[in-house]
Length: 116
Image (cartoon, rainbow, N blue to C red; front, top):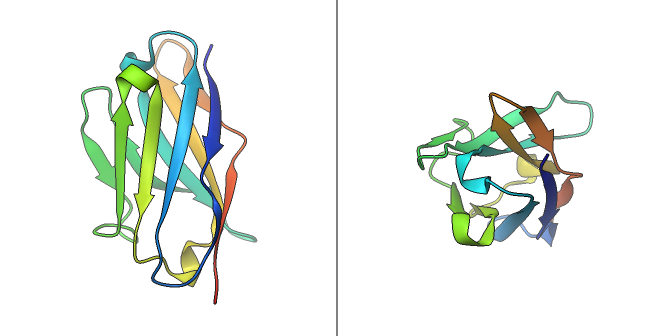
């Protein structure tokens, strides 16, 4: 089983930057596909970015060129660098870990608010 703890959320002005971190407990972090989703009030949860165990990245069209996902297997941590933030990026951001033999795990979420 994997436990995920997100950090790094907060209030930022439009155009600003934040870096989210997700620390994973348990073993075998390197074999999990990792990702970030978000959910805004009144909206469905959506994929933001993912990174496979081999390091392949994918992004939602709405964040391409602004967000970067990365992972540090030595630290059991996945990051989401968010630049050029917009008010529509305001949401709760959730880290998740996936492996086919065990399914998907979720963190508790971290709030990101983009407002002037």
